[in-house]
Image (cartoon, rainbow, N blue to C red):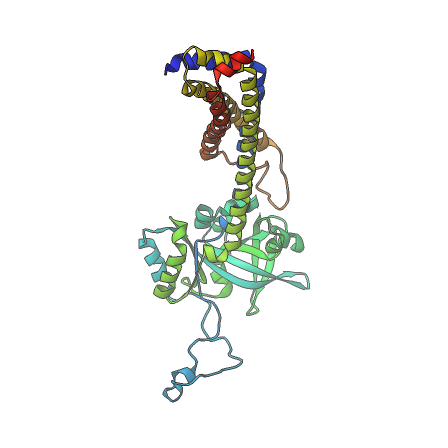
Length: 419
């Protein structure tokens, strides 16, 4: 088989019917363009929606849940050891909400090479005083530097600076909805009352907007030291430790390990947010299905065009076979034609897909639910371009294989006799 000669013949056939070739190439180009733009846009939205929760969710949360004691006195009695004991109206135990020996827990996490970082936290219910009205809220004592590094905290502070709760003593960042309820502007002082009845003034240094309206109507943030002071607790008082891992997939196993080791409750991100992973997987599956369908449709277009070309080129095929070209040679000619259309259309599709993604990325998208997002999100992952390029060649190969196989079986004697 003379590959150069076969390639020259394939190029001549392509150029001889350049309008049909152009239509087929445009079909592939359109399919690849929409495949790239669709996957980039859909996965950009996936990343945005997942980020609303997952970026702010620790891989493992260590805390003490207030719950009834599993070890009731009757179960400890030797007299009832072999009996079934039914106890009704069991009340929560007197366990404290704080994490015991939090300093030792933090020291252990520091030494664990699987841990990317951690952020201690205090959560407490309070009442914000608006005149004679008390508004129920939650104040979170945070290590703001670690929250910024691990959980993108500053991305959701829409006014003021997140770090100001460290720089300004007795300061607070209010949820946007809560600030609107209190009519609190930056620099104002708000009064809050603890569950024990202690009143404390705090200066507003920022607004926090998560995109979840109900959350923003009750949440507020201050430094760990400020919340410890408000609650009258010592410097080692911590109710939560939020852990970020280097490998999120290890979270379930490590949560069980930490629960046994630290004698506390541990919740992993997979358990806390299983519905988000399911939704993300389904959205991604739909986008891939639609994109691949576009490529298959383009393949049928190439299949039809090559079929028509074979019917129109029966004389040329007969002459080629009569002059010594084998059926295998003829098959390769039409396969090269199909692959040429796929290659040219694929390259153009990748370029136009990238340009269309850039256009989508510049379209304004403003909503109060997502204050940090200004344009539609697009994911420019290289894997989409590789999939698009490979699929364009595979689709066009199979689209050309059946017509090429038909052309290879043409009997030149029957064609020439018919003429």
